[in-house]
Length: 241
Image (cartoon, rainbow, N blue to C red; front, side, top):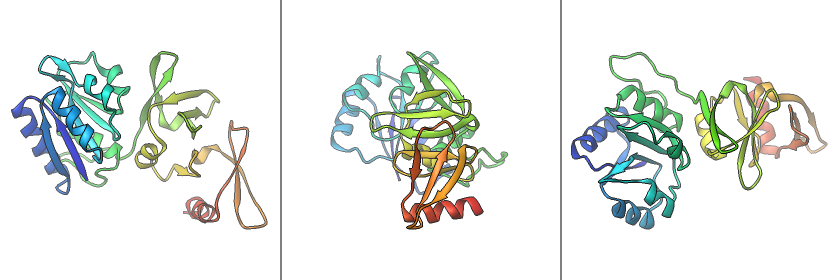
């Protein structure tokens, strides 16, 4: 797995690399990119990173200038000494926002959100949460925190991803279904199809068609979702575990 480091302070970049390798020795770290032009050049030439860890201020400018020209195609963990950029960060694939000096526990937790590490724990520390507990959702022009346990299902409408809560409220979110699938607890959430991820609490009933395919009626959803034969078998296993 490849990680791009964007950082203009050599001491910070060396410390960050050391922590990443301590948490997950198999990671391949590249960089650091220290200027806006370097970031733009790298993202124009190579987009196969699994993660970007990025400082926000680079020599008096912000990395958002580069990201607006070349939007990252992977999750971004932002690191900064300032807290006023949080909302802007989550508009650019941000999945976490760590204040300097970075704490290795917080970095480990951020990596676990996107599945880059799953079982590692910080040495001489208590085990950390493995799966996503919260996400940010759009309410008009504002971002609000949502507790994952309140989400009935996630839906992709070919343009945006929405989370629909158990109480029926609906919000647009910044994450893709793939990012959600990798970061949600698989005991509680299941990928039904290319358009849906459901929580176990959201299953109203399941019917079976003549060709052994399953149809799922989801809480607060107007349509039944028909699964492929393969996903039908996987759903049976998931429900019976």
